[in-house]
Amino acid sequence: MVAGVGRRAPSGHPSGRPAGLLTPAVLESVRERAQITDLFGPAELKKSGRDFVTRCPWHDDRRPSLTVSPTRNRVHCFVCDKGTDAIGWLQDRQGLSFQEAVLELARRNGVTVVEGDPEAQARFEQEWRERRQLMAQRAEQRQQFHQALLQQLEQGGAGADYLRSRGICTETARTWQLGYAGGRLTIPLNDASGQTVGFCGRATGSQEPKYRNSTGDLLFQRNGLVFGLDQAAETIRKEGTALLAEGPLDVIQLHQAGFTHAVACLGTSVSELQLQLLRRQGMKHLLMALDGDGAGQAATQRLIEQLQPQLVNGGLSASVVQLPEGHDADGLIRSQGPTAVEGLIVSAQHWLEWRLDRLLAPLASGSASPSLETLQAVEQAGQALIEQLPDGVLRRSAEQRLNVALQEQGDKPSSTRANAPSNAARIEPSASTARQRAEHRALRLFLYAAECRELLRCIAFKDPVCRGAMEWLSNLALVTVDGEITAMGLQLADQLPGAIGAAIAQAAATSPDVIAVLQRDPQTELQALLDALEPI
Image 1 (cartoon, helix red, strand yellow):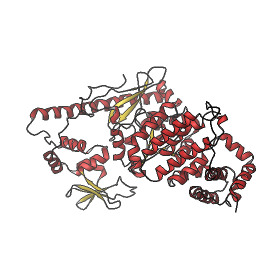
Image 2 (spheres, helix red, strand yellow; image 1 turned 90 degrees about the horizontal axis):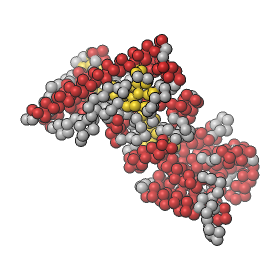
Image 3 (cartoon, rainbow, N blue to C red; image 1 turned 45 degrees about the vertical axis):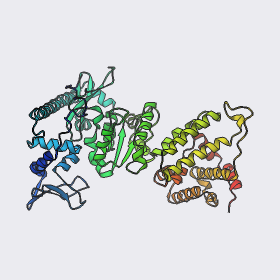
Image 4 (cartoon, rainbow, N blue to C red; image 1 turned 90 degrees about the vertical axis):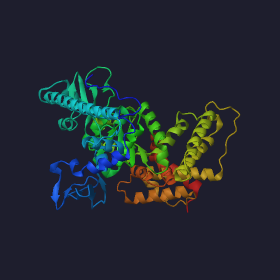
């Protein structure tokens, strides 16, 4: 094992710390003894009267605007109007929970945390000593591994060759303190404050397994660490958005390409503790960019289901960055460059649209029409999803997409439906349903055939959703230079109210074969639509 291993954390508490240590007396003692100025380095503070000033981390501070007051024992920024005490500052800067911050300050300031129980106090202090020893050990290992890699970068070696093959430059290797040991590239696993708590080893040859993490101990618990958060925290705080990739090398490659809000959770599952760590850094929007293989897509589905209560009540928003099948972020950047990732981020799908696409996928798979059993299964799954959504635009959008998809399949003759009984009755569409389908086809033609747009604008749309979508697309067409509005339409779809955004997204999500036909012979489709919808 390339990384040092310590004893596992005691059961019953993820960090190994004794539970129930935070009492009002401890809290009061910490607030009395902990000095806010002790949490800054001497070089960070500039004297200003009785106080000090330094740069504010909560906004783009080009001149020091954060006041650090010893008398009030607080920090306060008069530009962004944020402020806190020593406990809050430690929470914010090191990504700690309230209890963790209080206990850390208690340890630093000699506050007894277990009054009247010398044995418990002794265990607590012993644990802190063990943690400090482990931290020192990990820091020493990180330095040794890093120096070994730097030597290879100068003189040659398997580690240096591997970095070059992955497109990782020397500056990036230094920034992330990458190292080399035992035939593996070593990647330090840091907590939110930048302290190394473990290592990930990546085989540079044919060794198995390809990845190997440190075992769990007092410092390192896999489900309690967000890789790259120490590097990404500043961007996440400024932008409110985190980009979730799957593995450490994905994150490193993304940061090297300029996507400095990228993080990973060391696997395809995300714990509640990891989400809390991200939220403490100000994350309000989550971009999910897990691998484009089956495991990555399944993990995205699980994560959306896990987050759905927060997503529907407005506590969090999320989009899916759909990587090409068989690609991860690292490989996509190396094969197609950063612009490929940027384009996928710009066109990231709203989480509900992504779920609906997966749910409705059986209706579009294969050349034959789906069986009645498939239609029934899709309908049941769709209704189950809709029941999870509160009244509002999300629910209405999901209902509309499900109904339209099922009606389109119902309009096909039963003789073409795979596995359907030969005497099954044809489901005849109502006039309003037929017109609604034609209006959706008009939106699709407007997106992909610029030469038809002038006549399509003359159609009197009766469906309010389609009418609203056409108004937005018409405005986009007025500002474009080359006539291409598909990418702009996808961006717009993610920002508009549910039903209208869904209509635009549905029009844009057309198969390449259909797009080719529309662009090769748009006049035939245009004439059919004008005949059906009666131009003004």
